[in-house]
Image (cartoon, rainbow, N blue to C red; front, top):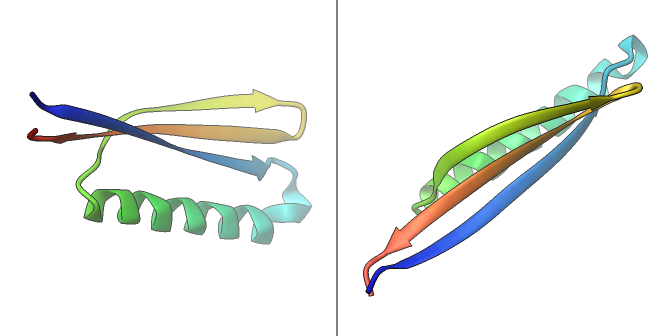
Length: 68
């Protein structure tokens, strides 16, 4: 029987103009996390973005199927 594992990455970034540097750093960390999951055999299932006030939250859901 195959085993399915799930993972998620949650990234919060500011949408105000004066925090561009911090937001870019958060997005760089997100890319590193996605690369790490991919190296571990995960595939990206979905990405959603939730915007509220002066920030946006990005949630990536990943899945890995291993033969059991």
